[in-house]
Length: 280
Image (cartoon, rainbow, N blue to C red; front, side, top):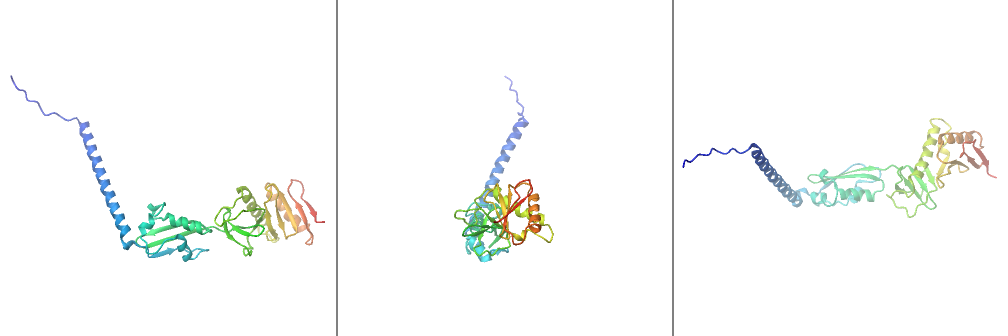
């Protein structure tokens, strides 16, 4: 019987490519594993080495808090390892931001709107804060509280030091806590600021300005918002519509038709002509 020699069997190209892809996947996995191990070893070394201990703070200027106050508020201790501090809580640690310290500052400093605390290798902590701006005084029975335009409670003003700020009445708070948002609807708060803003708009740059004579804006009744002038004339605006017209009319009547000795109520709540009722 004659033996026939079989030629070499050719492996199909698709099987060769499949094998190459499999080898590449294994190599990528091994590479990622080695990088992960190296990174973990580096972190462990950094977490144990005294070279990365926190020694100083770089704190940006604040209008309301000095460097020591912000440093203490962060609760970061000098001498503690920077990487341990960085990974001590949830936060954007991939940006080297210490989330726990940021939340500590925001919770304990009412004026701080946003805090950025970063670990700067090898031994520095950087602190930057964005602060809220006091926009009005909320006057209640026994207490005055400073708020910003978003309604966050910033400071107790028992001695009325901030007399240059607009005053809002008609808001009652139960156990107000600094740093918290005021417990009223956003519509009421926006209405109060809208009255002050419209008065300023009506005043413009004219000499006879109305705003300096405004004692407060009363938002106790959202359907009948008003304001006081020189503690003797109460202006009723009704709802917040046609506000520019109503305040323009109130200013004209107050400056031109009401005597400086008269007291009473000026009703500008309707589309009809405003009516001044003297106090009997």
